Image (cartoon, rainbow, N blue to C red):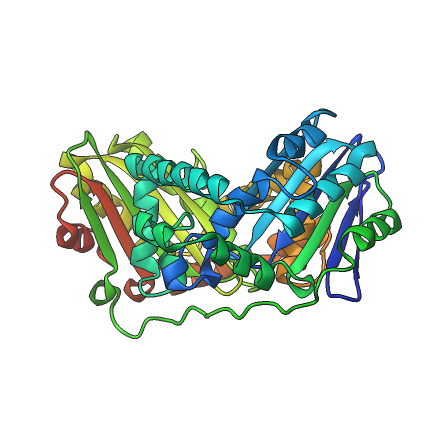
Length: 428
């Protein structure tokens, strides 16, 4: 498919180094991955992983915040980071001849953030605004509420940014402790994609991170299957707002990114609601004009996954639309997809993944995510073979396991929300 080769090496202190060698590329993508995210936080310190992600850009003993940016942007590159439930990643994309500079800058940020008090206080105000921005957006807010409904009582229910209350309790010392505990060899992956040979990358990583403390990978509290009906565990969350639409979210707990069933999970999602030709889009929007937007998606963590459905509904039509949605879910449980529908879904996944792999930054993400999760880097063809091998019975079996009340959570933002009526309308 692509002229790419994958290799990985583990340094003596536990740092994993993975590369996607792309000899035809002109740019390189460099990422330092920390195997710690919001689900590894203490409840009282919710938001610390994301706060650290912000603060490492504010300067080190060697580099000011502006110098950090200029060293990458000054050669045409881009510098960014993200925090998820499972990981944090600091990454740069730039012309390949400067890959060593990117690794030096990222390593300095990762190991030597200064965390000055004034910068800390300023950045906390910035994160407060970020929290408000998400809360004011009903489409985003319903996603946060759905996490509460699905993962009630677990770390996955907490917002990645934290809350105003939890951020008020965080101090620079809390950030320092997080860095000391989490930014260690056995918890760190360096991923590089581009025309840079593996041995050259390993030598540079050894120079920059070879002296890092080994430490250990943090423990993770696994998600347990609910023992009671979901509604009794807080599985519906509503926020009454006087807005024009009802923003509806429905989620189902599914397989993890390590589970072989994840390929049937992805294909089920494509058929259900990922595209304009999907069942939900055709049934709710095209045939019945019950909504403007309806879409499903999947997200997978180290030990569990979720298929979520989001729709923007007219309040007067919400109950009828949810009833239609439930009908489509029941059809997937009771009847396997046809040969043509399964073939189309496979071609969509294969085509999307093939195009995704063209980007150097995506190759870096593939390497970093794989080494962080499963400890090795599968080639694209290996992953796509698993997609091709999924049968119609596999998809139906996944639907039967997934679309059950005890795997479900529901969230709604809007006026006149009646959760019990919507649950009954869904009919699962």
